[in-house]
Length: 140
Image 1 (cartoon, rainbow, N blue to C red):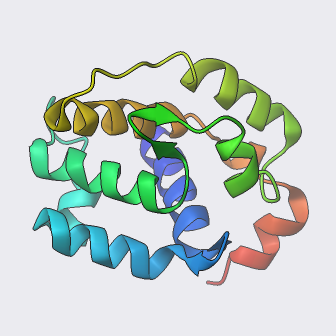
Image 2 (cartoon, rainbow, N blue to C red; image 1 turned 90 degrees about the vertical axis):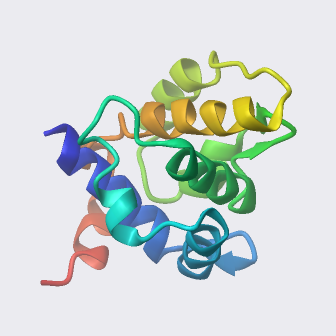
């Protein structure tokens, strides 16, 4: 079930517009910058530690879609980026839980911080997606 929730969140994040750009090109840019593939991202939970490059992919991605900056979660970012797709209850739950995660200030630790944030955000469940969005985004 955890894998399904993760896939649902990535599908939502990757396919919908965020602020001024599409998340898909950001994902591709961040994978290239981190030197990883989509398969590396998909396999991230197969071991206890997905590796520094995968964690840094998430730092790049979350920074570029406007979730984190300067090793901190941007207040209201989850709501701004995903609030139009997920329920208000999901936004409140994610912000209350994930905003408690803090980072140190070094570059390496910022990748770990982003990894912890991405893991927390994977707590979004399919039931958290607003009903109209579930059918609109599901093709297949």
